[in-house]
Image (tube, rainbow, N blue to C red; front, side, top):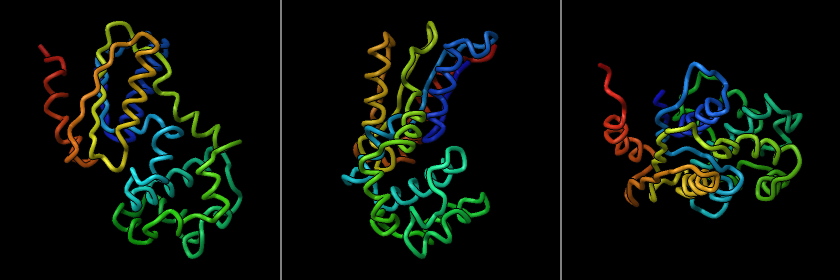
Length: 214
């Protein structure tokens, strides 16, 4: 199988490759892994980037709102949105991520900085994760903790100019995979490439790497 995906799909690409390498379905094996701009390292790269300026402030607000809302439905982190989000956002965040609002609509109804989104308590919790929150982050960060299947080619596409998913995510993933004996290539699409542009620049290379049906 040839696996590729963009942004969150990049993380899913690596997780699927990891599962196949561990024998999740013996009928399939990954021959190519080519994720683009995946947030593989929430604890060590993505979350710190939201507080040190590497991640665009509005992108940080959007991603944190989505992540906390989604994860709370799977692994209860809080009982009431008011514990996490400041007014007036506490009363609207969960409704915004109901699948019926566009990204533009969501962004327009949220603040421009995480300082204005989060309560002081949760601002500090996210700066210094512990307990259940840290467990959730690490559960999402396991995608690069294994070696891709035998013969699988792994190329991580990223961009120095990406202010949604900093390049440190790909660098860290590559280091972890290499430590486990994998051969990994990291492709930087440039300091002038945004998150979306990094995907557009990666598409031709990925297409050329795909096996041709005969």
